[in-house]
Length: 481
Image (cartoon, rainbow, N blue to C red; front, side):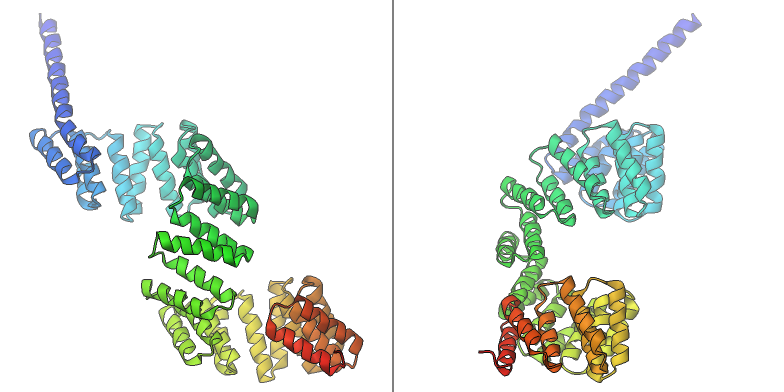
């Protein structure tokens, strides 16, 4: 009799529990409907009603917490997920969601225990491995991040987000083949994924597989002709390839689609600068500055353009602003140092190059220009020391051999100078500057046949009108019509 009563009681408790769950689920549906329609305030109101009627419902707190998360209200979201955990300490999803919020607000030390707990409670919880992988990635803990993304993929071989995250990690680590494999897998699962084509295109770009990169980014544009980032990526790649007209066309389309895309103006300005169209370059750099007034890049680039326009005062103002905004930027100091050097202010130039090298001890370009500044001061041994450092860092840099050769000429070390001129041309047979300076060297040595051959080579190779004109003048002086 007592046993029967006990069983009846248990059945009654179970029935009440089921009724309660059914009632809660029914009440949650109204909030779910509003949430699905992204009517966040209405969803919050409905979930709050459920919580008021059922204060012990963990799921109601979780649902309301997700809406707070959508509204970017982290603190009430955390409070709701925490309450859900208090009500149901084995609620894996609540731990995961709270960990995600902690990650979003930068409270990483609090996020990791939540992800670990979610996985402990539910060892096959794919989303928890994904979130913990992202945590490790933010912390630059590459191996555990890779392990978590791979575990998520093992649990669900069709989980696109994990392939994307692992591919991004591979790309960042320079493991380009592995990155390509993951992005390719995404394409198998989602053939029209614009993002996958863009990212695989980026991987091919990093691998300098230009044709494959162009094909992928062009496919992304075909799938979505209004994707500004796709045009931006292809435009920047065309810049790397020296296809400036194509780069300008893509960057202009980027700007048309997204007029406030600051880097598109900067890159297009660079393309115009490379073409010697300084007015257009200045206009684009000025637009970049308008959009990003506290970013060094715009001022440094515009300063260079002003200098090329013959506006040294405007150039210096911009270079000073760039250094003011980023006093520890080796690039800003380098660009101002170059300006000073070109203006014949070698002491100021060397001071900037010294600081740039202090900040970036392997900054070969700064050693090179400091060497040229020392040459300008007549400090030949210091110049040679700097050129030697550049060669140590970049043994295949043809230009520095020309610079060191000129230093050797000043010291009267003619055999060493000729060897360096020859080395520069061996490294880069199309180096017009190398032929021009070797031609001057031969002329100085009264070897006209070799000098004439070099100046003719300059005219054949150089795309700089000024250098071509100088070579022609040298030929006239050597009696060549």
